[in-house]
Image (cartoon, rainbow, N blue to C red):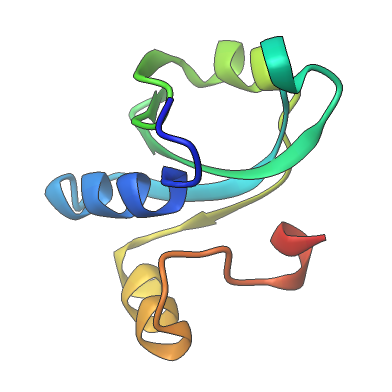
Length: 99
């Protein structure tokens, strides 16, 4: 895992896959982060979740179950451009994602 880089890595990956969605949400940690819920970013395309920070590729349903995903927000290309210009960073971009 590249600690603290998930938003940047997912953003850069979705730029290469314009038909994909950028997703920000809360996941439950495992291993050293077991029991800790934290903000995270990944990419979804055709029912597959791609998590460049953890180097994971798996069906979305499995990814959501594994990470106990909550409070996710999905962004299409237009939303990504709008939010990155507005906030001038890779994310998170809304209160639901921050809390």
